[in-house]
Length: 172
Image (cartoon, rainbow, N blue to C red; front, side, top):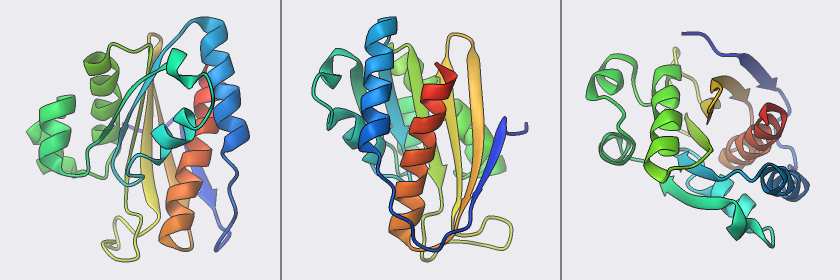
């Protein structure tokens, strides 16, 4: 399994303004009469918060899951225990299953997933701090992103939200 896109953000700490992107996504979903749901790990609900910050988002936002624990990923989204054991929570495979799982569980047109290592601890040589995987599930299939961020925990999390929202808009 390979990502559809690999994104490197090299700035140490950058200000990400997600409001414009969240508004564009909400309008695009309304225009297409589509709904969205999220399954978030490392962002802890920030994508759901960005979308629901927009007036009128209740027309398109179904629900958001914060599945920080592996057991939540398995129980709520149907991520296979074998996937978590063989590839880990931070993997393309897990992002794929999370995106498919949230789309199905929430009965939404679009399912968004993110899983990664926001830091400042928890990274390894193989999976460093700042590594994030995302999935965008639609009727057409699942787009996978691999992202690499530098900087603070906030930079990793906010950069993830910004990048994912931008990619969901482009996917629609």
